[in-house]
Amino acid sequence: MKTTRGKRISGDERRKSILSLLAQTPDPLKGNELAEKMKVSRQVIVQDISLLKAEGQPIIATSQGYLLLQKSKQEQITKIVACKHSISETEDELNRIVDCGVTVLNVTVEHPLYGEITRSLMVRNRSDVQHFVENLQKTGASLLSSLTDGVHVHELEASDLEKINHAIHALKKAGYLL
Image (cartoon, rainbow, N blue to C red; front, top):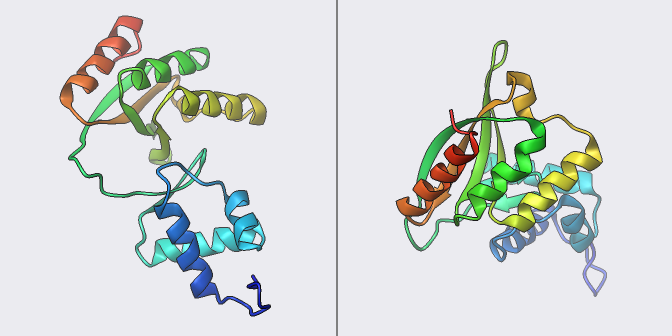
């Protein structure tokens, strides 16, 4: 990456800039966006993110992009829920959760060969749900729950237990809760 004066910026400086960009937004940033801002390839960004993670930076890769986990100003409550539903019910399940003001942090399945497989989701609102569903349709990828006949676990997060309980009630009402 070059500055306006034509000087080359070091990898360390680029990684500091990436960290700063991630810290400035609560929303995930795509690797392509970071690459464009840093004037490098996406592969360089992938390597930079790996180095930052190796240094202990709390960066996660979600389906929406890279996210820096930041401590919130208020204490968040988390709860694990076990669900089962068809692929076609995924959008409804996620919408029921986020409509209660709850974030879906991740999804976990228990695979008979590989054991526990967990992937970050960070789905906070209907826009995130829509983006996730569009990516699912566009890529033709399978959900992790397809490995376990629809059974999966979500870690939910909210500012208070009432919101989580409301989301659990909505899942139970739909028949998704195990």
